[in-house]
Image (cartoon, rainbow, N blue to C red):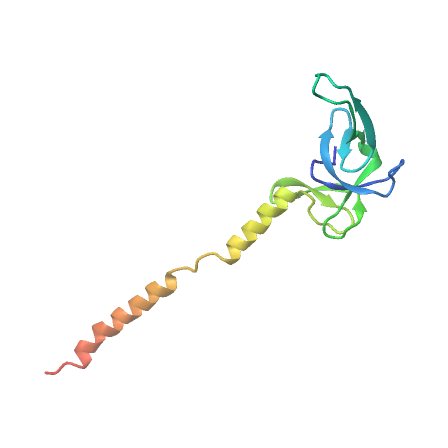
Amino acid sequence: MKVKVNDNVLVLTGKYKGKQGKVLKADPKAGKVIVEGVNIVSKHEKARKANETSKILTEEAPIDVSNVEVVCDKCGKATRVAHSEVDGKKVRVCKKCGAVLDKAYSKKSKAKAVEETEAPKKRTRKRSQKAADAAETATEPENGSKE
């Protein structure tokens, strides 16, 4: 199943066609997803104790995964999901713009990029500077001696 929890999806068919929502729960075995604000059903709850009251609850019911399409964060369009290998990891990719859809992976890759750009500078500069200073001081007493 190419839809995961916390994905933003667009409903393609049915009463809620065109509505976007976040995936709250995914059931790959049954091929169903529960989308926030989509497929709202009423559930009657009877009072079980003397101090409780009966009530009518509204909740999201599962819909088939074939009726939703993932919305890309980068381009904002509903797209099919392709798989690609980036840095040895299999990730989900937008077919329209090529952006990585796996949020956990994209956060890690951004963090790595920041670490590479903000990496501490090499110390070769300081060492070479010290070596040059030492060489200068070693030559000064020979040339500039007071004798």
